[in-house]
Length: 247
Image (cartoon, rainbow, N blue to C red; front, side, top):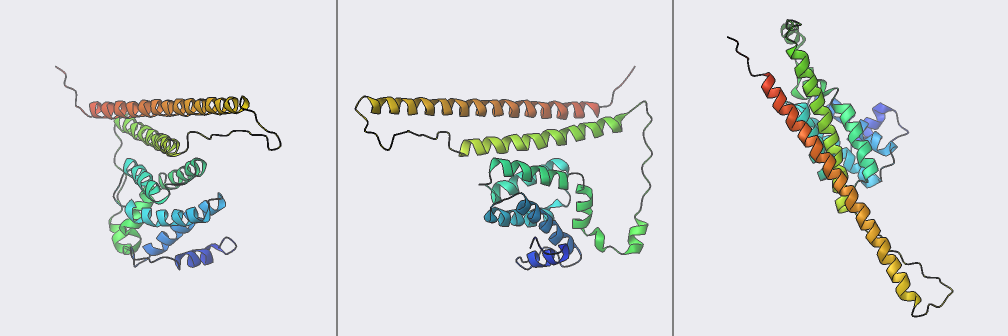
């Protein structure tokens, strides 16, 4: 499929799925979205079963983009990846999250317009619904800019939190100890050497466990800090919307 043109590649990939979510022009956008995600997974060197699951994840994500905000979008990405790609390596998972975030977040309004069916509206209706931008607030107020900054910061924190939680999940589900005992093949060990080898292996395993627990504690600390930042931003945003009264 990688050797085909984009149009031929989309057609070849699409032949492997049922496309019951859309029956109009939105189906083309849906298929191209799945193709782009699949090609990214293949180019990054995902195992073929993971490439297939990346396609399944993309096919599931696209129809759900209508009517959600950026925090819900990031939560959707996390849930779908956890369901479809639970065994993806931490490196590939990080790359995949970065790709989906950079693909979906800057263009989420465009995706919403496509999924909601705006591409199929008659031209006359589209012209009737064009609206002028709202009149900006006076510069002295500055509420619009502050709200936008808060939303942008919230999106950044949510993205980092998603990555941290996936790293923590991979660490907890992975093996904490790789026990190895180096035994010479051409030498006979006496009774005194065997306990020494076992004790060395046990010390190495204890060191691995300590490192793993230290890394887990560090991730938990980072996650806690990010959640505190989220709560502080949410509280600050609500306070900024409370009208002030002067005598």
